[in-house]
Amino acid sequence: MSTIRLTAAQAMVRWLTRQMAEDGAPVVAGAWAIFGHGNVAGLGEALHAHREAFPTWRGHNEQTMAHAAIAFAKQTRRRHAMMVTSSIGPGATNMVTAAALAHVNRLPVLFVPGDVFAGRGPDPVLQQVEDWGDGTVSANDCFRPVSRYFDRIERPEQLVAALPRALRVMTDPAECGPVTLAFPQDVQAEAWDWPEAFFAPRVWRVRRVRPDPAELEAAAVLLREARRPVLVAGGGVHYADAADALRRFAEAHGLPVVETQAGKSALPWDHPLNLGPVGVTGAESANALCREADVVLGVGTRFQDFTTGSWALFPAGARLVSLNVNAFDAAKRGAEPLLADAQAGLEALGAALEGWQAPAFDEGMKARWFALVDPLTAAPGPEDNALPTDQQVIGAVQRAAGPATVVMGAAGTMPGELHKLWKAGRPLSYHMEYGYSCMGYEIAGALGIAMAEPGADVICMVGDGSYLMANSELAAAAAMGIGFTVVLTDNRGYGCINRLQRATGGAAFNNLLRDARGVRPPAVDFAAHAAALGAEAVKVGGIAELEAALAARGGRDRPYVVVIDTDPDPSTPHGGHWWDVAVPEVSDRAEVRESRRGYERARAGQVRA
Image (cartoon, rainbow, N blue to C red; front, side, top):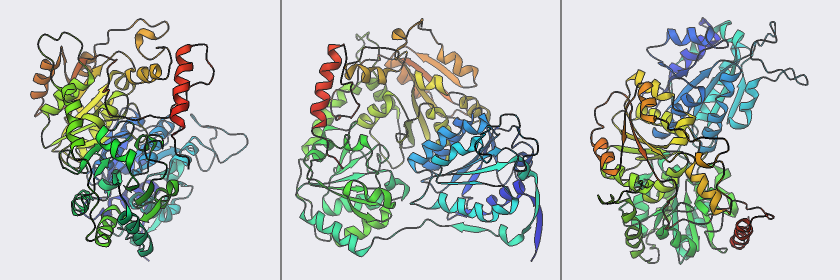
């Protein structure tokens, strides 16, 4: 058997360069790295040797460079991923939040944190977590509950089994998610005689699971008998590249479609069968259908509480059919499971339902919805001196958007307002991280999207709170010569949670800067800050100036940040649904007691599992 002598780190990187997706590009497109003790000598040297075939990008924060990797994977429909490596200790644990984000959203990323010495000779080393009850523990054990596959490589030859296992999970439609290969620094540098066959090129194909005939028949029977069916499109539609299959299915059967946060843009906003966003942040048109539905066909959705209105949106007697590639998701809440890839499943279900037409529904609901909300996004008149609302900002961005635009966000006000108001024209033109809703994802995520889709007009919608949490990858994007637009709405605090606090009877407290103890609201010059990180930045005074700034955004080789002050109080008053946020049973405040009574009334309509 022919062999080649390499260190474990060299073998890992060499092997990754030989693993191809069906489009001929590597599954793992390269590495994000912040070096320190634990990965600089071993992996650093290996990455340098392969820097042309396997590029390495330098981040400024371990969590946010992982967010960029995750956004890249999402925008490529999980066909490609990135590796993210850090030193031991804080560098590694900084990535745990990102691993959780990837886990919740079912997105592939390869985490390779450095680890303490497998040989334990110099223990305890700098930044080592010691557990005096378990000598095998390191900081990297934090990754276990938020990894789909976890392994600690304590001998070089363990990579022969571990690396294919890692790629199997990352490319498996059902098990897809983050993989962690904790890599002790001494093992990285240790050499072994590797079989040359181990490095033979391999193509990892997307598995399209076909439905079981019995499950297919059961689902078809339920739909044929339905009087008020509705289809809920989730993120799995995008990951399976099933937008066309969804459109054909809906058109063939006249079935109305509503969209989750992850599923939004699966159908164009103006398609007559797209009734809009569903759930807590949903349109009245979509939610009205769901409130009356007797059969709910979920396609590629995990039925998160924002989709289901905390399980108070669908009627108690409604039957669920869950077409999902993951058996865990397909069987939730007593659903009739249809275990299948979204594309293959819709095609098979369409054939089983040949000749069936869904009963007619009120097609005027959609027009009535837009008649309510379109005025909210319209530009204010010249006599209006009030601070702009978030809805007006969204309207300005919408008017500036084109076919190549991808609007994105993650947390705070923007997910809810964009879900209701944004008019997405093509698949993957709406990128919302709302599984983990992680503040700080936005700017790094915009960078990842721009790397995945270089021709896209990426517009990041972010509030001042999220911006202050994580903005350092503006500097990375500027250094890399990657342009995207950031619309930074400054409402001087956490406006979204302030509204939730007040809606549940709480006093305004510790969310807006004006309500925080010992805080003198600072006049943060966000434009100057962004410019200091290498972005081009401008502060605008209103919607007209925002529109002018957006019109000038094209052709830049660095981030372009537009800052605008907004009113923290207004939100879209139309649509939406109750969300289960527990209100205290006992309080000295009358507002909380009244909110609790409303909470108990709402919970009475909650369908229990």
